[in-house]
Length: 254
Image: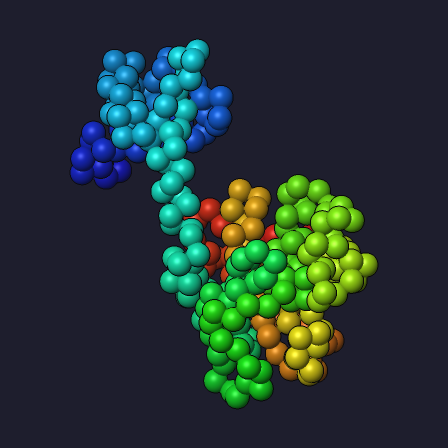
């Protein structure tokens, strides 16, 4: 026997929100929404009026209903940078335990990646790392994974954009090569470009096709070659997805 919602009116409103989300930007008519939900139009009209009052629904000039701005704010608040470390901590801990390496969570801030969180392995790490540290996106695995995801969503960066992102940290040609490789493989890499003897591999976390964060494995360069590299890249793909918050996915290789 299916358990019913403890508060019917709240359940009706949540079902209406789900229907509005499926309707997209064009929205749907009251009749279509009511038919899809299996409720009377008069009942749904009252529910939609309450949602409109709080900004969770709005009505277009032709009378269709669609999600309101308040609904979008909820999603943005849930996934904003100050919440991401707590939301993703279980995934970072599981990944670090699987590979026994340093794991970082980062996000883009201007032209740089800011490190939002990290999980250190049991064994000693010979790399300086700190939450809040900034590094150029163009030379980091985190940044390259992020920029590659932007290119997948919006198209390749033009020469002017490449020059701007490269800055004084690398060359546009080198960045172009790194992003092409990241798009083809589904992950970004750096090999001793920021610290001698240290390499990284990273994947972008997407929401609606656009990056909101990236996760990297940082290790001595010798452990990110050959079979060790393949095992760590496989861990990124296997460990993270089931532990991500709803709505987040990994950038996939084409």
